[in-house]
Image (cartoon, rainbow, N blue to C red):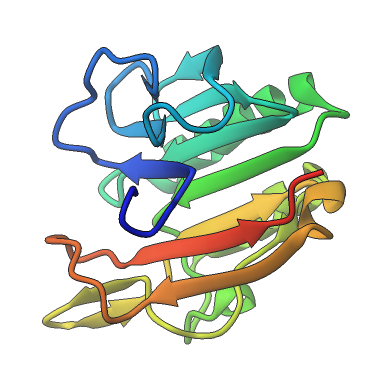
Length: 187
């Protein structure tokens, strides 16, 4: 984060969520929102559940998300309902929802749409969230192929402030997921 001057990140399936003020994780430690230590506004915990954490960061609300690909569609739909309710409780604040939902959709650059992808599309529409992903670069690359499962959404006021969304293809992450980045013009 320091090398690229990244102010805020969402880590999905982190190895460890340290008990530090600039790291806040969900109830299962499967996703965390973190900031570069000593820079920018502090993080404040708003709420956490299994697979999601809602934090305040200055004027913004950031929701970090992770949902395992090994769980059922019914569990996924229940999870989306919980995240939708968490987002609704923060309205009308400027909100970003970032993470790995393990859902595929042509809407965010995947070659095909699966049932989870359709569920996320409906969820985003009902949550009044705009898709930030651009292009078709795979966010997850494995030996058997790649996919776009890491997604970024925001309320319309935040989406209008996004000047760049990209997948870093040349950066080693020691993971099968690539780093996705976005640049928001802060007010």
